[in-house]
Amino acid sequence: MVSTGSNTAEKPVGPPFWLLAELTYRCPLQCPYCSNPLDFAQHKQELDTEGWLKVLREARELGAAQLGFSGGEPLVRQDLEILVKEARELGYYTNLITSGIGLTADRVAGLKEAGMDHIQVSFQASDETVNNMLAGSRKAFQQKLAMAREIKRQGYPMVLNFVTHRHNIDQVDRIIELCLELEADYVELATCQYYGWAHENVSALLPTREQLAEAEAVTQRWRERLAADNHPMKLIFVVPDYYEERPKACMNGWGSLFLTVTPDGTALPCHSARMLPIQFPRVQEQSVRSIWYDSFGFNRFRGFDWMPEPCSSCDEKTKDFGGCRCQAYMMTGDMTQADPICSKSPHHLEHVRKRDAAAYSTQTELVYRNERTSRTFFRTN
Ligand code: SF4
Ligand code: SF4
Image (cartoon, rainbow, N blue to C red; front, side, top):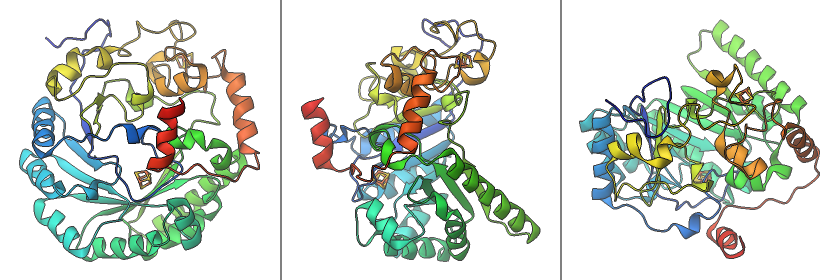
């Protein structure tokens, strides 16, 4: 029987479906909404090739079927192709999540030969100036265009990902036109989630409710137009919860489907959870199976027994699991609280006040994600 640790969830714990392998925190770009931890420069150690091969084998044996290679920029790892080859042999469906920086035609071919199934390229904007301003690189946009074309030339299915925020949300029309031009198979318009670097920059990034509604309406018009033309490109609009009255069912429940392994081998139930005051297990010290089923970190918020009020007696708790633990921690300082996005949370009004102040803030200065800035977070905090 599968151990559920100290919790008494009704459902037995199933295996992870998704493995996210964050191969490195190194990245040539400096996006001010990056989801890497603020203190990433403190975590320089990286698993070596053997270490990652062990993770891939153990997670696959446990049942993981989807594998995302991400970072940082995963292309800075010269052993990426070795890992992809092993993943293919193990039977994973593999996805590369890249900025496109460091990609070349030869590398696209090498990844194909190794068996990579799918590539996702992130853009910062449809406009070169805005893109490069947000990426902190003068060459980023042209490189991304060239590599998106190369990926399609070599016959890959391709996702183009745009994190949307105040600087690009009014350009959704142009973004979709660019994606059509680049022959994307899927377009992900991912509304910025305010964790890590994005949380630091919320007053310079958060769009207004009206801007969001308009972007969603534009996307819907395009969906209808593409369907009428029988065009295969699919548009995915990732809705934020900042303007909602109920939180998202974060990660579909803590430790239920997702397993993230960070560059230094720390295993997390979601890629943001490193911020929480929990000692998470490391793949160097425990098998992936024991991490998933038996570790304190993965069992901490499984089930419902951990919940205080108002969640514990709430009839919606099976829908949203009390929301996001990281959001609760960032907004209240207590990771066990109801996610303050929820209107039943005693902290909801405070969230609304701060959200509206951020959405109408005139702040333009951005904190860029780079080593120098990251060091200030562990020197001073
Ligand atoms: S969000 Fe930007 S800075 Fe962060 S890893 Fe991705 S490309 Fe690099
Ligand atoms: S009180 Fe808790 S369980 Fe109920 S809707 Fe709000 S966050 Fe979800």
